[in-house]
Amino acid sequence: MSKIAVITDSNAHITAAEAGELGIGVVPMPFMIGEETFYEGITLSREEFYSQMEGGANIVTSQPSPSDVTNIWDKALLTHDEIVYIPMSSGLSGSCQSARMLADDYDGKVQVVNNQRISVTQKRSVLDALDLAKKGMTAAEIREELERVKYESSIYIMLDTLKYLKKGGRITPAAAAIGSLLRIKPVLQIKGERLDAFSKARTLAQGKNIMISAMKHDIETLFGGMEGDNVWLYAVHGNIPAQFEEFSQEVKAAFPGIPVEEDVLSLSVACHIGPGALAIACSRKITA
Image 1: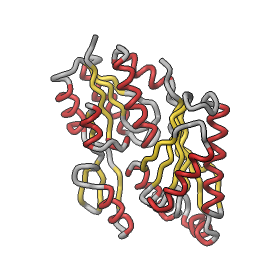
Image 2: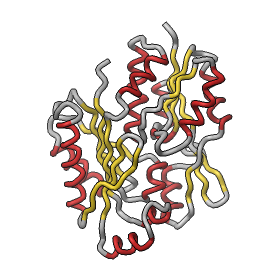
Image 3: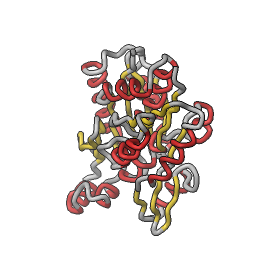
């Protein structure tokens, strides 16, 4: 049986300590702050990221360099036969396509998974890959299984501000001004390769209800029903632990039959939507 290494990027929000416990590799994602490059989890902590963002710094995401990726691959292949590499969704970044081009030089030893995941659902794919490897699947078989279920996840995110969507060009300045005046809290959806507008809320309570109702619909109609053995469910936030505690309890009350894991949004998502977001996410459990 092949010895398989599982590697991801820091968009999955797996800390160095967690990576060590799991025995996986993590490619750090670069962020440009002004003219300087920082690497998530190495030279850029979550605390520093949000401090810079709230201080008005211009923060831009970037792809890891080819050498950042291949150096981790080469090190892993010294002790493993094959690699499953799980980068962030190809619909949200070009890093997946870049990795696939790099993998062409590895004679099939590196399988790059394009399963349209980000943040907690990407982290779930990493854990799924580890489980599938323990079951004896090859790297190619794991890639095929993860890509087979790539649309079997949902994320709903309620934003606290329209400022960062305007800054990134996702909405017009006029729409942002009107939305801010009306105190609209947009709810976005990440499903598959797309980040789209889903709904609008006028209050925090309304936005939370919209997200919970949407997730109930997805689980009941797309992911096999409300039993705990069908899905992984997450309550997530973007640097607002006080508000999040109440939201997490509301999610747990709304889904009494499903264990709810708590987590934080990856910095790559936060970079585009700003601080203060609340989110709910799920992935269907793999039964292979």
